[in-house]
Length: 174
Figure 1: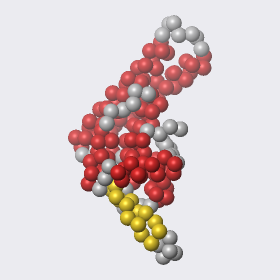
Figure 2: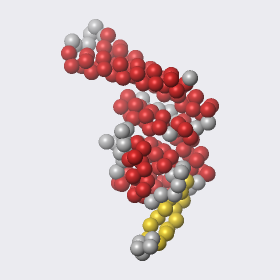
Figure 3: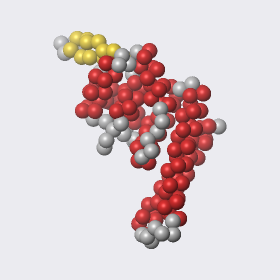
Figure 4: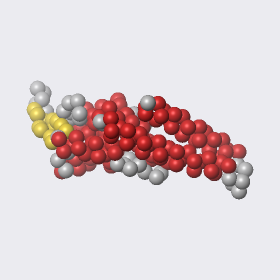
């Protein structure tokens, strides 16, 4: 699966909110928190750590373990907190597959946001979900679409999934 570098950055920053972690612990915390939606490899996490350190969103410190192994511990900076907020509020992909994955990851991090920022994010998610639901509905109802049994079942299921997703967002808005 192709991961948006911004979503990897978001997940790393979010898991570093609670404590300093090694790269391996970051990977484990991301898997524990986000595995139902995404599961980036070390090959995706390592460049993200380098990128985040270059932008001063995180810092690293080397610590010698009792066993004599040198480990790098990463921690989030004030700049990283601002970057996390920015990533949570940035516009969503127009790609429906990327949208739903990104929305689920962002919703999983919603506790970080202020109530005004959360309201903005929920409005953005709902607008995107309506867009994708309506696109699927249009194809489903198009009289010129070939009568393909399997496509119609998949499209109907997609419409239902987006309706459920929108209902969940509306529940968060209350």
